Image (tube, rainbow, N blue to C red; front, side, top):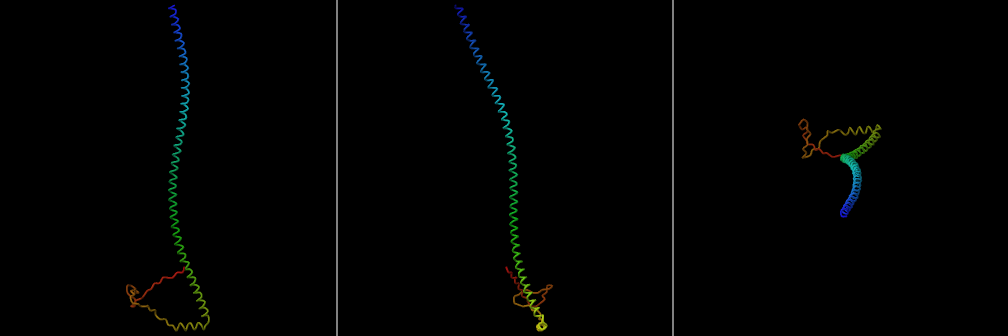
Length: 193
């Protein structure tokens, strides 16, 4: 029995090793199939991630292009603002020049108004004098009196007033035309405002 027992023990040992190997082989096969499934899932996820990466890269390119457009638009707007600022400054300067011109024109207008009023007053005075003379000289007797008065007043030659210290001479062709010195006074015209 020794031999049979040894054979039985060896056979049991071989059968247990075989059974163990089979169980081990099946468990390894299951693990391999699980790993293959996990690998295929990971590959699918990798493909999905690659697609998402492509989409993100495309979106990034779009964002870069959009940002470039915005920067270009911003630069154009800055140039427009600068040009508008220059134009506004020129308009303000033109406005101030126009105001200054308007003030000058208003000043000249007020002077012309005053001169016009003075001329109107002078015209009225001359008109009244003319009417007075017409009334006076409309009769023959009054006309004769006026003629006698004019004959009575003989015209005297005009005499220049001579004063000491006046250095103004009347000169013609570089030579003095009179012996007497002439005093020249300049009086500015009075304006009414």
